[in-house]
Every structure is written in structure tokens, then in C-alpha cells.
Image (cartoon, rainbow, N blue to C red; front, side):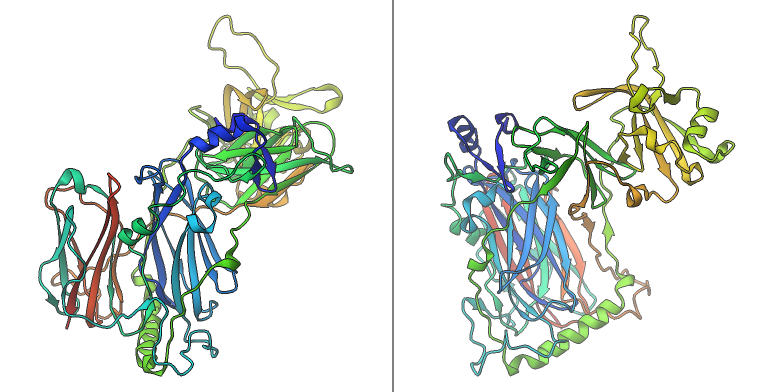
Amino acid sequence: MLMAMGLQLATAQYKITDGTELLPLKKVPLEKMYVHLSSNLLFSGEYMYYKLYVINAQTHKASAISSVGYIDLVNAQGQIIFNHKVRLEKGVAQGDFFLNTDVPSGHYKLVAYTQWMKNGGLAQVFQEDVLIINPYLADQSSILANGENGRTEGGQSQDGATAGNTAKKSEALAIETDTSQYGTRSKVTLGFTLWDKKVGTGKYSLSVRKKGDIPYPTTTTAESFSRDFFNAKKSIPQTIGDSVYLPEQRGELIHGQVTQDGTQLPAANKQVVISIPDQEFILKSVTTNDQGYFYAYLKKDYNVPNAIFQVMGEGQYTIRLLRPSHLPYEKLHFDKIAIDTTHGNPIRARSLQNQIENAFFEAKPDSILPKGSFDPFDGGMPKVYVLDDYTRFPTFQETLVEIFENVGYRNNGKKGDYIRVAQDFEKINESYNDFPAIVLIDGVFIPDHERIKELDARNINKIYVLQDQLVLGPKQYQGMVFVETFKKDYMDTYQGRNVLTTEIAVPKVQKRYFKQHYPPAVATYDRIPDYRHLLLWEPHLDLSGDAPTLAFFTSDVKGTFEVVLEGFTDYGKPISLKKTFVVK
């Protein structure tokens, strides 16, 4: 719907030119976002884990509008330390970031948003203060108390507490531990009670972390977020003449502009073919509008950061990829947390424990969840030719001549020869066509078939041939030829006319996080130290069972630990629960 309105791009946003463009945008609800962090006090050598909840600002339920979310970690100077992109599924996503020793001690802000949400400005996006301690750098002036004893502005202390509930019970859900005290490397069982299963069912995340005596920024809970953002903007405030960020409803939005070389005038009605090279390649065609702008949605997952944009047809053109602008991070307000000499011993102890944990990281690996594979041939059944099964010929053209009966070059007069795949006639009255084939090498779209005649066939591993009739943009094709080289690196040397080769950020992969187990009478981990402060991070807590429980094990670290559950019911009610226990 939005793409059909003919919106104009201004930098990396769309300019609303009249009421027919404004009205559909006004009808799309704005979003707000809550992020549950595993901790907002981080040391070098630790992971920050996060769970995103994107919420419809009008209904206060999970949003189905945006399909992509973004997370920035910003320092006090407004500089971005990292920027993550995550795929949203039914309004939620997860991710993590490893804090290395390059990041100095200081006060940071985690900012999370969708592109659509940015239309409401800084006040619409999620912000959380994060304190980072890097004990390996000499300069700690940004977090020192300057003579004051542990003063904070809006912060809270992590000092120990007696075991028990530390937050009011929810009328929808309750959480309990099987006891209040545990030994080291002991099994802990959490039990969950849904007072009303219909009301309490929802999306939740859970962390179990040691409480300490180092002050840290005030943590935003799902309940406090819902109160603070209840009156967030419900629809975009922009009007005619303003620029907006479009919602990424159909996938990740890629947009750019094509201009004519020499004059820099917009190149209208030009076909741009986008290819993301890989075994599971992505191939899309878009057409520029009157201002030379193009935009395309990437619905499918991709694994490589490389993309090739090519303008089809005669002439010389320049392609620019336009990226969304950042919010005014220089206007962010940071809560200041003061660290003084009384915190020296716990800082040193935790840093040493982190070093030991990282030294044994390979014994406790996370695993990457397999992505749902997709078929780049869109249901077609290509025939696969492994060239080692045949006599080898020196060039690609000779290989087609000698091995293939249904694929070969055809004369195209002065325009150069093209590759054609023979039709697989399925109907007796099917008309003959002379369309060229779609040709890709390692997922790179090849518009000029003449130039690959002399390609060294000794570098080719397989050739896939699809005989179906295909359509790419305004043009029809007869079949597809996908060439796979041994090194799968054709993009590294590919050059062509009217080509832009660039990088786009790959969405973060989904992981299954390691969970430590100590089975009875099994000595697998007896000689491996265990100094975990974060005992459990469960970003997708499943409470669908009749009597849901969750088990994990304590580490060699003693003290008071806190179980934190955050999330929202299917009806949009925020849930924030805490429970403490002691490890002796």
C-alpha cells in the first residue's frame, strides 16, 4: 500500500507531498519498544544480552507492523559503539554483544527502535542507561566519584539482600524457587504459577544474576516502561512537506538513487537489479521513480554483508545507497553513577573471575540456531551438474557446448551473444520464445553474458540449470543458470558498467545460549572453574505447560542472586517479577 503511493526520497527518508500520501501513513499506528537487559552494569569480558518487545502504541499489544529492529549503544559524546539489526518475529527479537577491552569505562545509553518509531523522535524510542567498567585502562576519570562516596543520580545499589520476593506479586503470574538457599554447583528449580492461564499467557524473558555492592543505573522494568510510555505518540506527528521514515512492514527496506553520469540528473524509470551473492542468493528487481529513487524490501534472511546493485540498459549511471539518518544522540541525558575506592575489591574480584571464565569459553559454547532455509529457485527444480563428473574443458563457453544439450550461447547480432536454456514444453500449444536465461555466478547477477565466455571453467564446481520461464522486473527470461565456483568468491573480482558493490549490515543471528549442567556422578566439569555471575539468560520463556518449571545450576560464586522476569501478556499487560535466593 505505502509503496504504491509514489513517495519521494529525501536523503534516506520519504517526503510527504500531499494529503493522499499523508492519510495512509497516519492510519498506521506508531510503535514503542521495551528492552529487557541481562544487566545494565557491564565489565570488559562480559556479554550484554537483550530481548526486544515491540508494542503497538495504540493497542499496547505486540506490534505486527515492523519486521526489523535496531539497537545502538551510544557513549556520552553521542558516538555509536555498536549498531545491531535484528529480525522481529511477532514483535520480539533477541541478541547479544560481547564487551571487549576497546570500550573504555563510562556512562552509555542503549537506544532501541524501529525505523517507523523514529518518526516520534528521541522521546518515542527506548533508552536505558548502562555503566561500563573497563579495569584494564588507566583512565577511569569518567566514572570516579571525585571525592564523594558512591553518589548516584537516579542509580541503585546492588548490595546483598535477604532471600525472598523483592517485587509485588502479579495478579496474572507468580514465581517461586524450590528453596531459599543453595550450595555451589547446585540445581535450582523455578516454578511458575499462572493464576489465570488465559490472562497470563504471553511473551517473557528471564535472567538470574548475582547482586553485588557496586552501584548501577536504575533499571527499566516492563511495568515502569508501560507507565512512562503510556502516552507515547500514537501516530506520526509529521504533516505535508515533512520527511518520514517508512515502516519496514514487508522486510528490511533498502533504498537509493540513480543519477546520470556527467549531469547528475535523476535517472527515471531505470531497472535496478539487486543481488546478494550466496548459495541461498537473493535476486530482486526495482524501478526508479521520477526522482531516480528506488526502494526494495528484503523479506528473506541473508548471511553475507555484500550486495551488488546494477542499472540495466544503455547509458552511464551512478548509484548511491541511502542509509537512514541517526537520531540526535548528542541530546541524550546520561545518569551519572559514582564509583569510589570502596568498590576496588569487588571490581578486581569480578575482573579476575571474568578472565578465568573467558579462558574456558570453548568448554561452554553458545550455539547458533539454524535459520529457516529458503529456496532461491522459488519452487523450481534445477538439474545439478558437477563438472568433475565430466571431461573438463578450459572455458565456460566450451563447457556449455560439450556437456549441455539444453544450454548454450545464441547470437544476438551486434548486442553480443546471450545464454539461453531450452524450453521444457509442458503444453502442446505452448509458444516458442527466444528469451535469454538469468545467469548468476556465486549469486552475482550477470547481465552481459558475452563477457563470461572465457571464464576459466577449471574454477567451476557445479552448474545448476532451471528450465522454467521466469520474470525479473519488466523482463521475461527463459530458464536460469547458476554457476558455483569452488571458492565461491566471484564477487571479489566482479566489475561491470553501472555497478555499485557495497556492504549492508547482516541481521544478528539467533543463538541458543549455553546452560551449565552438573549431572550426578558425571565428572565432565569437575576441573573446569565456574565463575558465572549470570547463571541464566532465557530470552524466550515458555510458560505454556500445565505446571511450567525451569531448572539451572549455581556456580562457584557465592552471594545473593536475583531472578528477574519481564514481559507482557497477550493482552498487553506488563509483568515484572523478582525473586532472590542465596548461594553459600
